[in-house]
Amino acid sequence: MFDTGSLAKLATSEVGDYPEGIEASADGRSVYVVNWESNSVQRIDAATLKIAASVETADGPRGFGNFIWRQP
Image 1 (tube, rainbow, N blue to C red):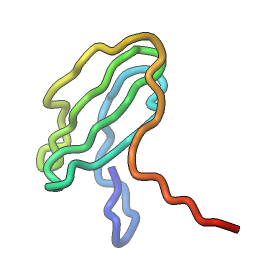
Image 2: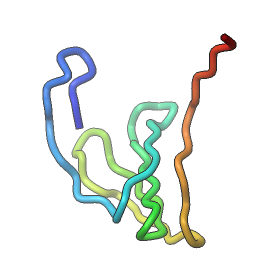
Image 3: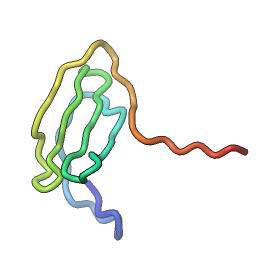
Image 4: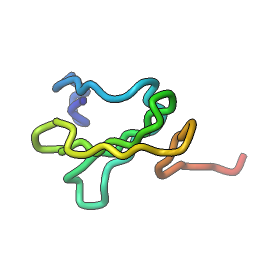
């Protein structure tokens, strides 16, 4: 986890194997991580920086989130 202003490292959370995607919740209270090789999605509590929930998925979940695309 990093401070978005200073980019200083705040903490490290142990998540599943090969984290492939990350997305903050709309209310800013949670961060979701998709783990490709361990086939899971985890919710991290943004206040405590601890894993609050973990859900198994089908084989090989990939990145998700808000992607920005600009036309050339």
